Amino acid sequence: MMMVSENLKNMAKNLAKEAPRSPSIRLGGYAILSRTIDKCRAAILNQNGEYHFDCPMDKTLFSFKKITGDQFRSFVEQGKTDDEVLDWLNKNGEKKNVKQIKEWSDSVENDYYYKKPDKKEWFASECERLGLNPETTTLFDYLNADDKASFN
Image (cartoon, rainbow, N blue to C red; front, side, top):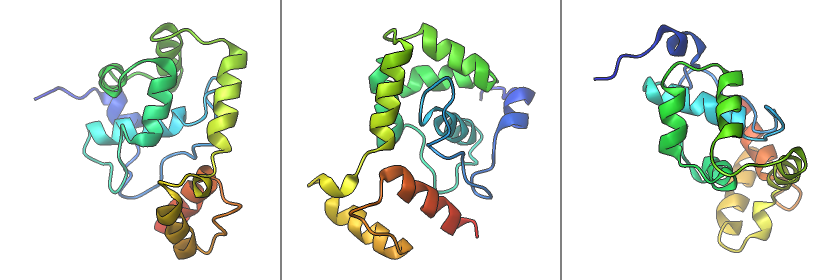
């Protein structure tokens, strides 16, 4: 069994008790990254509750940078801070400049699942459950509302 660092234990959120950070919070310009870090740390400690690390949303970040969830997890497992994870992300995978990171982050932040045929039905029912209009709700809006509903 892996030895878990005290740093990791101290930084990890228990996602059975609180939501990860919003996907809108940008770390180093990357949307999703802070949330992905929260889910990764929690998964390592089996404190991820209903949240999934290396989910399709996380994979959009990994795909953009041309890294894998396993590579990301291996670095986070070492008890690295957010800034250290950001530095690692910038140095690994495909190099991206500030403009590319902003364009990618803006595009994922303005992702309307209702416009995607393969996601439309699921997204509409999830929005209905939360009292949101699926036609005007982004994926990030939905995630933020779902997090809030889960812990209020």
